[in-house]
Every structure is written in structure tokens, then in C-alpha cells.
Length: 204
Ligand SMILES: Nc1nc2c(c(=O)[nH]1)N[C@@H](CN(C=O)c1ccc(C(=O)N[C@@H](CCC(=O)O)C(=O)O)cc1)CN2
Ligand SMILES: NCC(=O)N[C@@H]1O[C@H](COP(=O)([O-])[O-])[C@@H](O)[C@H]1O
Image 1 (cartoon, protein in one colour):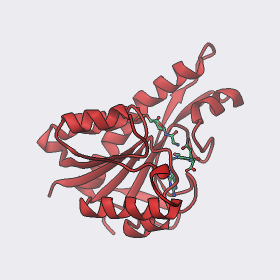
Image 2 (tube, rainbow, N blue to C red; image 1 turned 135 degrees about the vertical axis):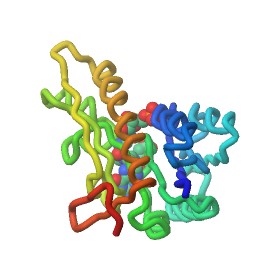
Image 3 (cartoon, rainbow, N blue to C red; image 1 turned 135 degrees about the horizontal axis):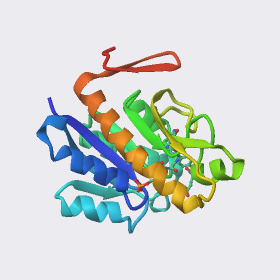
């Protein structure tokens, strides 16, 4: 079975591109069936469309309410029947309509070692705090913000002369590799969650 991935983005989509590149290999066992952005003008949408992948832009401001946006996002995702929804640089908190449509089937990659430095400025916050080890986390999305069960983490050294931009790119390189490795494992070999803990190479 080829794992059907729906990917949510808000920007350039380097994580999306890494998944698309991995999907070129039939042994990887996945295909990206839908890419959705929360704002117009995302380069990642253009890249996906050029690759012939179904795309959509659902901006909150295009809807009468946040709840109606959330419902429209849930409906659009459901139309594509994904096996997994991958939030990769998606800068909107998903609401109950999306979460209930895909319980335990939404993952998010975040550029910090959660639970440290949640939110949208992970590398900056890590640098400002003065940590010596930063990194990235792939976790199961829940109703909280960056609070779901952790599927994978990778460590990245913080160097003394690092700027936010340099550290961000070093983290993102490790983050992309982790995302490709872990999503592929989940689709090929399964995973399970028990309370706060998540396990790869396992089935419920
Ligand atoms: N229900 C959840 N939805 C999402 C989660 C999550 O853990 N639970 N993770 C995010 C990704 N994320 C960090 O990894 C994150 C994204 C966005 C925000 C945020 O504050 N968003 C604001 C708007 C920000 C903007 O548009 O510039 C908002 O949603 O109003 C925090 C963390 C993906 N979704
Ligand atoms: N918490 C949300 C957040 O900060 N997400 C971060 O946005 C970047 C998206 O990069 P990309 O658009 O090149 O894939 C990634 O580094 C991801 O961790």
C-alpha cells in the first residue's frame, strides 16, 4: 500500500520538497496527494502544482469565521483521503473539525527540541536562551500547541558565532532528514501511541 500524504504549508516548503523528492523512490512507499497552504503566494504551492499535485489555498481571512475555515480545511483534506496529514511549516493552529476528522493522524515538524521553545520562533528562542544543543521534533498534533506525543527528535549543536539564520538552516537540514525518515517509517511499518509515549515500527 502506498501511503497517501496531505501536506500543510505556509511558506517556501523545503520540508515539502524533501518529502516530494523521497516519494520519487517507489521503495519509499508514499505519495503526496494534496498540498494546502493557509496563505496566498506560497512558493511551496507553486512547486507542488508544477509537479502535478492537487493544491489548495485556504486563508482564514477568506472565511467568515475561524471555525468555518477549520471546517473547510477538514472537508478539503477529507476529499483526498490521506493516510497521514503532515504539517510542515504550517502557521495555523488546527481546530476541532480537522482534529476530529483525522484523530492521531496529523503530525507536525517543529524546529526545536520540545517541550522547549514551542511556537513560531523556535531557533531564535533557543539562541536567546543560550542552549548548546538545539534540534527538531516531529510530534502528533493534538488540541494543544506543540503538546502532542513525540515521534522523533534530532539534536543540532549551537555554535558560539551562530546567528538565528545560520542556526535555523542547520536545524532545518536535520529536520528535513528526520521528517522524511520518520514519515516513511510510519507509512511502511506503522506506529502506535500509548499515553504520552509514541513508538515507531509498531501497529496499534
Ligand atoms: N492544534 C494544533 N495545531 C497545530 C499545531 C499543534 O501543535 N496543535 N502545531 C502547529 C505548528 N506550530 C508549531 O509547530 C505552530 C503554528 C502556529 C502557531 C500560531 O501561533 N499561529 C497563530 C497565527 C500565526 C500566524 O499566522 O503568523 C494562529 O494560529 O492564530 C503556533 C505554533 C500547526 N498547527
Ligand atoms: N512551529 C511552526 C514552525 O515554526 N514551523 C517551522 O517552519 C519551518 C518551515 O520550513 P519550510 O517551509 O522550508 O518547510 C520549519 O523549520 C518548521 O519547523
